[in-house]
Image (tube, rainbow, N blue to C red; front, side):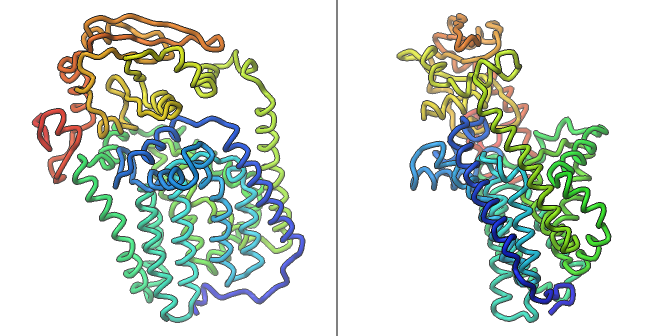
Length: 515
């Protein structure tokens, strides 16, 4: 056995720890279940919902896994919000099970504390949003668990080879969830290159079993104008520049995720973290490599909290193996208090009414989310095509109607699923109403209709607007809006081969349009 993975002597499993695990797991599950049915769908969730309706091998911004997951939930448990959110509601339980199973051979008591720390993290009490991060976290945790168990085996026997293979398979599934799986692959590479060169054959098998995931994604991008690559590497990074606030925001976010108790105890017993790294090299790499990667990225990009969600649990596991045994309870209490403050905040929110939010900037968005059906009832009419001016309202309105709603206008660099799905030529001559929350400039719409007029209405005291255009002129829209979209978002590098591009084929009749 690798001396860096030597198991600790067996120790008695504290009865109190068992009670804490049951309480944390059950109470956090109950809260997530309640939040999942009490709070309305968000824009991103509604956007991903349509991926679950139009099943494909990929989508505009990301690989397909969340769409497949939503499609599965719709097919098995029904087309409801609670059913599509159920995977994220159950995810912390699966995450804890994977971490506990992976680390139990080293020290089952500390492994249990690691699970408790993860379950006490506030994010695992509150997060009920089904996004691309949901399957990413799940498959990443399974891949890591398999690799940890493979590395705990003293010999490269049949079981070890199987675990390496499964780790690779799950890594491929993580890649089909979100490109941040590449960071996990980088972590594996660093670990084997620095500490386990004698098991490079295991890494080779892992990589081979992961390759179907990238192969599926490459095939999809070849036939869809490299939409994932254009979004993730080009269009969303055009304005990236250094600002001091970006790395500072990243540091503050990581301190929040670690919680005040975890951060303080980690600093106080930092020598223990070093010792734990020497004993558990892979676990340390799973924290330090992503931490360093995102730190470098934060010099130019604002790192979203969700970007690190597939890696942060391993920080709690590292902490559980680093702190003195007598300090684990104190850390758990600190985490529980911090989580309790978040629960109190949610309880306070639940006791507010819509009127309590009237004076806030969020009120119009709150009304749009809670009174979606009422808003649509006021603007809908026979023979009228409803659209919205941005993907968030379009997705929310479309989810309420269970009918895909296009975005009128060029939109932004993200959420460009319209480019894959919508053929605006079918609306030639039709009447379109474009719903907005701000007073629109009718001059922006006149070139594309025979006549335009502004409609306005209120919902719970919030003004809403709709531009009604009659006689839609597709040719003008193609020359004005679609041409702008092509110039702005389809500057596909010539070195990238293409076998298809739905937007380009509709726009110019070719796979690659001349510029």
